[in-house]
Image 1 (spheres, rainbow, N blue to C red):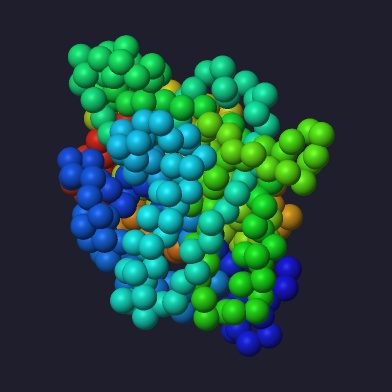
Image 2 (spheres, one colour):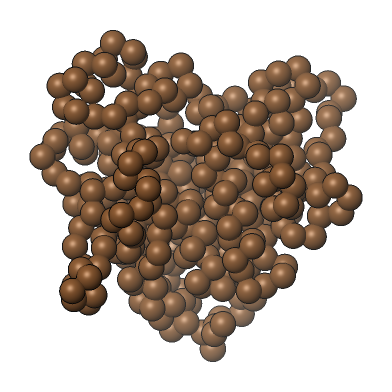
Length: 341
């Protein structure tokens, strides 16, 4: 991979910020609250960018779902583009206030319109609803609703990303403009497909690509050294919420796949774990690593003080557990039921 001739940075990190991290549950979905959340994280991200070559990506689940409520006739490719601009602006403003210049990029991502994901929608979007309200929305608007913990949320098709159209533009910024932090593939990118009779022609697709799956592909195509997935919860836990709960400090892809970590939560933690596995397995570097952890702990994730590190070379059984403190406190609670089980 090429670095700018003027940069002294020697590692490239893609950081994915969840849409729920920008809009925590229990808060009203407003630009003001998003700006506040972004302002809280911006100083840490700006400080990290002094020592690491960063690319930022983000989720859009709550935001794109709210836009769909406001404009029920709009398709999800258009709503995805709108949310990408909205969140890109919020992050750019916050990082600018922290002294960092950014370049939010509207990214189109090619998917297969015949993928099986269109037969079984799984991507949560929008706010949470009670059972009666979810049933009413399903009947009146034709939405597919699925349980998300004790509540319900709308689900839409989420096909895997095949091609990032703007990948060369992102690489150019990294190689030629080291002082600019790219914000790319927000919300998993705008889902598009190629017209079979004229492959150069793109058309929008009614779907929402998982931002972590796209982030893993983005990190691999950029030859990134690391891929960090930030959430409004912690790392990967076994028996989350139970007296014998314990958090993984390090885990290999083989261990995570063998224990089916996250499979009980296909709409939340499952895709995050799979994205971490995919990046580590698909990277050209044998030392590539991924990490999952809380947004508030991002500065501690780099040295594995917090969160879960996913890498190929994990000794023993392929997992290292965090030591229990003298007086164990319950794991960080998130209203998102996204732990490994």
